[in-house]
Length: 182
Image (cartoon, rainbow, N blue to C red; front, top):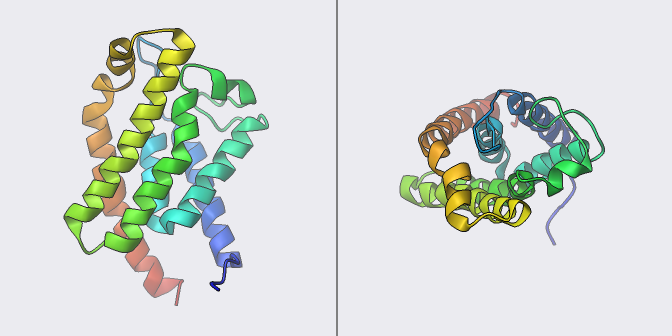
């Protein structure tokens, strides 16, 4: 049986990553179709690389729970359960799955660049697929409209954010292992 307890260090790192996600959500650029460009996915990727699948997922769940109870942690300093059932709610709901996939890849395949990239892309695709489906369901839009509003304008920045968060995450993780986790 494996030890499933979280240490004080684990809880602290989860809380710090939750705070980073909340802060990065405030870097938001409104877009014409109502889905803002934010730095949340950068922060989700960073948390997943730093913490791995389980703890990265817990950080995103903590973020979502804070937002659900009304803490102003979502984009534009908003919060409340209603944001889970608006056109961008699918993106929020996909964050734990995104973090799990990317964190899994970071834990198990950090030395295999192409395999890690597969998990990084998979996590990002999960985010887009759930986000687009929710957008289309809520707005009663066709899938092509959802892709046009929620995916196409974001591809260049998504690639940049994923690459930067991954590089930074692995570098920070390596330093933390030597400084803190020993």
